[in-house]
Length: 177
Image 1 (cartoon, one colour):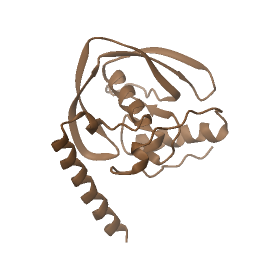
Image 2 (image 1 turned 30 degrees about the horizontal axis):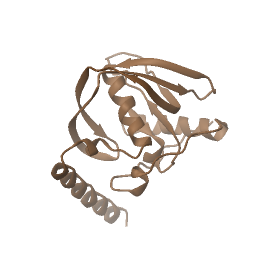
Image 3 (image 1 turned 180 degrees about the vertical axis):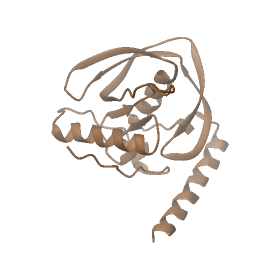
C-alpha cells in the first residue's frame, strides 16, 4: 500500500472546531487513512495527529511518543479513542500543535489516563498512559471534540495566537499563488 503525506489544516479552520464522527467500519480505506496519517505526522515532524487536522471528520488519531535516543518507533493508530479514567494528579506540559505551527504553551491535564480504542485490525484495546503519552492522547482526543490546546489559554493569548495564524495562512497562500 502506497502511503501519502496529507496537507495539515492551519488554525483557524472550521473543521478544526467540529466534533468528529465515530468510525463505524474499519475498512481498507480507514486503514490506509491511518497509515497516511502516521506518514504525515512523522514527516511534519510531530508526535500526534488527529483526522480533523487533515480535514477528515472521523474519530481517528495516530501518535508515537517514543522519543528517547535510539528507541524504536511505537506508532499507534486509535479508532474511536475515549478516556475512561483520569488521575486526580495533574501534569503541566508545554504543548504545541501541527495545526498551530511554531506556537507552544503550558497546559495542565490529568497526569495519567486510561484509554479505550480499536486498532486498525478491529481489535479493542485499553491501556493506562502517563507522561508524554497521556498528554498527547488527551491533546489528540481534544481534536476529535473540536478543542484546540489554545482553548485552555486565557482569551487574550488565544486571540493573539489566532491573529498570528491568520497572518501565517495569508503569507502561505501568497507564496503558493
